[in-house]
Amino acid sequence: MTLMDIPARRGDRVAWADIAKAFSMILLVAYTLAGDHLYLNEMLTYVRMPLFFFVSGLFGYRVVTATSFRELMRDKVTNFIYLYVLWEFILYLTTKVASLYLRGWPPLDNLRMLSLLWDPLFNIWFLYALAIAFLIAWLLRAAPAWAVLVGSIVVYCVSVATDAWTGMPFIERLARLFPVFWLGLMFRPLVFRLVERHWRLWPLALALFLVAAYVVYPSPWTHVGPLTLAISLTGIAGFLLLARHVSAYETLAAPLRYIGGATLYIYVMHKIVIFYSDLAMTFTAPTFTARNSSSSSSPSRSVPWLDAGSPRNRRSAGCLPRLGSRRSRAAPNRSPCWRSSYSKAIRPPSGDHGPTPRTSRLQRGSCAARPGTARSASMSQPGRRRRIAW
Image (cartoon, rainbow, N blue to C red; front, side, top):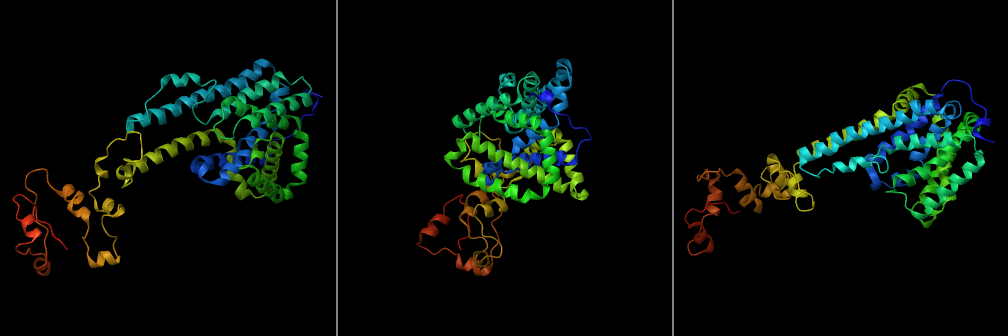
C-alpha cells in the first residue's frame, strides 16, 4: 500500500486542527520565555514540534498525492523556503544588527548567514524542515508506505541513541520529525475517526504523557527510540483530543483558531517583541551596570543614568536602609556608601564641593571633635570635606 492508495477525506478544514496548531505554538512561545529553567518545558520536548508536524501531515495529503512536481515546488517548497530566508534576514537585522548598534556586542558574522541551508541561524528552522519533509514525502509517495515508515523510524532511533534532545543539528531535528509527519499522512482517516469518537479521553492521554515524560526525560531511557516515539505519539493524541474538546466552546475556540491560522507570524513576531522587551529592561533596570559589570564577560555600553549614585541603586545594593526598617528609623543616613559613591555622585565637577549637609544642634554636639583624638586630626586636614559621623 502506498500513499496514493489511501482514501482522501472530503470536507472542510476542521476547527480542532487549527486549535492543535495553536497549542503547539503556545508551547513554543512558553519555551522561548522560560527556557530550560522550567522542568515542564524540558518534558514537553517530546510533543512541541512533533504535534506541529503531525497536524501538517494530516492536512498535507492532497499536496503530496494530487499535485505535480512543479505545483509542489511552486505552492509549498518554494513558498516555505522563501518565507524562511525572508524571516531569517528580518530577524538578523532586527536582533543581531540592532544588538550591535545599541549594545556594542556581539560582533557580527555576516558569513554565518550563508549557512542558512544547512545550519539555520534562528528558531524558524521548522519552515525549512517542512519544505524538505513535503519534498521527501512527494518523492516517496509511490513507495510502500509501511517500508518508508519503518525506515524513518530506524533513522529516528539512531538519532535518538547518539545525541541529546537539546542543541541538535538541523539534520537530526529533521530525522526526528519526519516519522510523525509521515504518520500524519498515512493514518489520517483513522486519526479523524478516533478524535471524533474518543475526544473525552483527553485527560487520560495527557496524564499518561506527562507521567511518562517526567519519568523518562532525565533518565538513560530518553535514548531509547521506540519508547520516546511512543511518548510523543501519546502526547500528540492527548493534545488532539483536548483540541476537539475545546472546539465545542466558541469563546475559547475562536482565539485559538486565529493563533493556529497565523502560527508563522505569531512565532516570528514574538521573538522580536521579546528581544526589544529585554533590551528595554536592560536600559531601565536600576542595577544593571553594578550587577552585570563583574559577572558578564561580554562588554556592555555604559549608561549614564544607571550609575550607583542614585538613592534607588544604593538602596538596592544594600548601601542605604530601606524605608520603614528599624535601621532607617534609628539612623536614616548611616551608610558607608554615603561617604564614597553618594558623595562622589552629588559632588559638582568644580572645586567647590557644595555646602555641608545640615545637622541639628544635637547632632553637632554629638559629632564634635574632641582634642587629642584621631577624629580631630582627620577633620583638621586642609581641603578635607567634613562628614557627619553617627
